[in-house]
Image 1 (cartoon, rainbow, N blue to C red):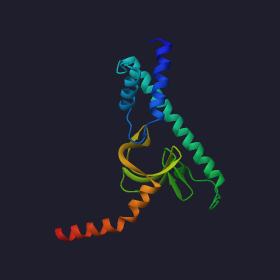
Image 2: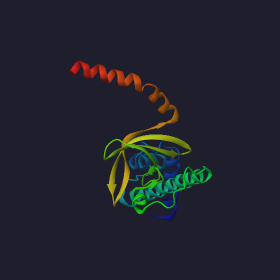
Image 3: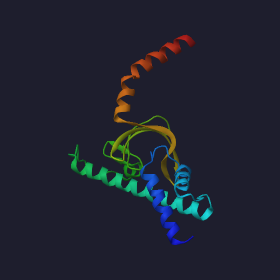
Length: 177
């Protein structure tokens, strides 16, 4: 593939990525959208590999920015307690003080099961509450596409309706027993 075409593909893929909802967009969808914009088949092995590399690099850059922003916020926040260094065990599990963080640097509020958890993350300047399944790869726990991320407004609406949901669950359980 000539360098000029590679550059066009890269620019188009980045444009598509910047305008996409990263919580739900797949690499296939990005490749398809870029293919349509360029009028070029990007499913050919060499082009597909280029798209994959551009997507991966973009995601890594976004994660690095999010981590840098989080560290900046943590540096500005007053320390709650200073009890010395965290133990090696706590560092491996991603704990910082009494709070637990995952391998991506997101705050874990609770573990619903071995594979499911509720985390607070920042993406594109928005705080999100994510309820998601995780999987293990190369010793790291990574988020899967199975789950939902809610904005603060959506979380507020949901949490206000939890009592009604609880009531409906109890009513359904009463019918079953």
